[in-house]
Image (cartoon, rainbow, N blue to C red; front, side, top):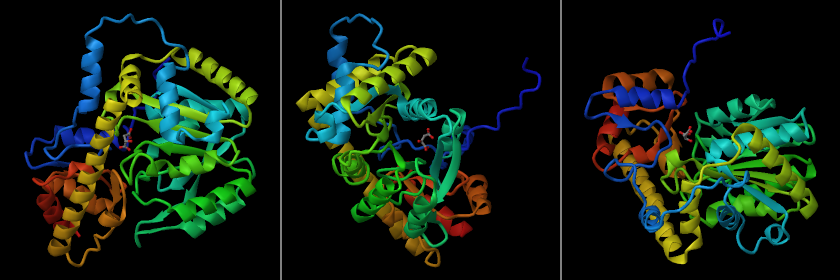
Length: 396
Ligand code: LMR
């Protein structure tokens, strides 16, 4: 049965993270996987989460199966966070949200739903993009393509080429977009550009699939939902995959959501039914713990305000360390244009370094970034930012 199976080449992101973990040099710098590290280089346990867990732990609670679509209080809290309490689509009962196994699980269930609804579906993904998007959609039977997004040599968004592509692809095509903190470039559309893209999507009858994994890391929890709310207000079908891995520092609990904005409540009911069927076929129903804790934080005003401050703190730290890295890089390597690091937002920056430079950084200095040249900025802190800049200055 298995003799002919190929060895697994490894994931392009996690593989390099593993390489870094195996490196025993004390000065190594981990800029690989999108993980938020605090100023001391630790993955924090948020106080909001800890308080919710302490409260829960005081009362033994049964572990009955959750419904296939997940915990109701979690699902409704996800909806408010993404679409806003005053969303017309939400208040009209046209948005279906399921609790998913992380953002990846949301993308995969969404992909399965699209394939089920239209087996010849094709999806366009940004170039560059998150490597796993291609695997997820291809795994569900969709054909994947790319649209131009970012020119890493000149450090600019390719907005005109992106628009041109959207104008030329077949009607009904699916387009994968990142509402904030684009992974891997950290370069986002501004509000006017989102309006323009939305108009093209509507005119060309494209279907937007929005992947929001870093809500709160660019401008703020509300601000970062701009594109989601804009598209949901247009009475067009929209899919949204969201993740709480980073903004709750809750990676291993795999908490996310898939939301589908439908045209009517009747359609919403049928979409929910098919989502339940997909879930039942794959894993029956989702796990309880993480969703219950996040639901407590999102639904209890006191915990919510603690969490909001924590997200604001993570965002501010990323901004500060970006500025610091830029200041030092400018001094250490004046010939190297490092302005990308302060122009880009959120978790990631796209350095434009070549593979040869990246490999030298790893081998000679223990500074680890993935092959595409993406750095996960929170890997930098006051203790290692100068060493990082000095190492970069040696290879550029
Ligand atoms: C990343 O891009 O590094 C993160 O989203 C983690 C992952 O699953 O790839």
